[in-house]
Length: 195
Image (cartoon, rainbow, N blue to C red; front, side):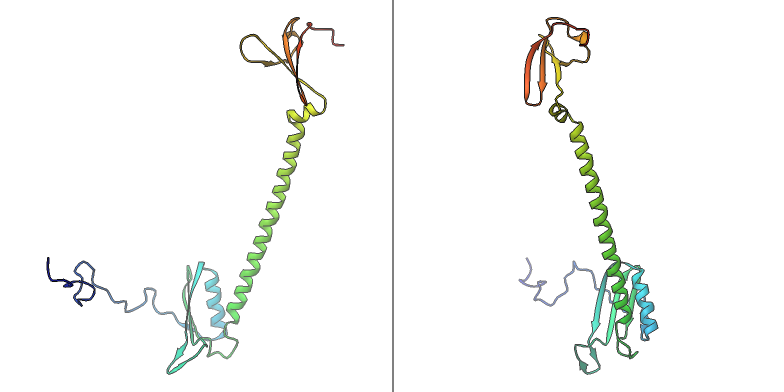
């Protein structure tokens, strides 16, 4: 091994495995014009509105030797819209009026979409409830509760079969009669004249 710390973080020597840094001398998209007037700021806001996804915002709070809580330059970037630079001080009007108007429009649109989706979900939930209730009234349990019965033949071999015709239960056929609260066993006396 070489000397301890020869290429370590405290050695000051460059790490041979790291690629050499390439300085970024100019922004990839170029330097955007600074929006100064109310009209330019409104155009920048409209451009940002046409973008998609989240906003990246940076505010420069220093101007010459002054530093304050007031922003002297605002940089906003959004996918599909690029970068805009806004000077909120020079134009003399309320600095972020145009952006505030667009933010309010977006808020109203989001509220309307949320309201419409909630309404749609409520309507569909009510529809599913009605269909569920209809299904329950047409189901076998509800039919039995109204006084009907399900009659099955009970063969000596094989599965039981729902009786669909009187001819399927000649005299002596063992039957299972299912009603709302249980089942009873019966024996067929054969087909009758229907009375």
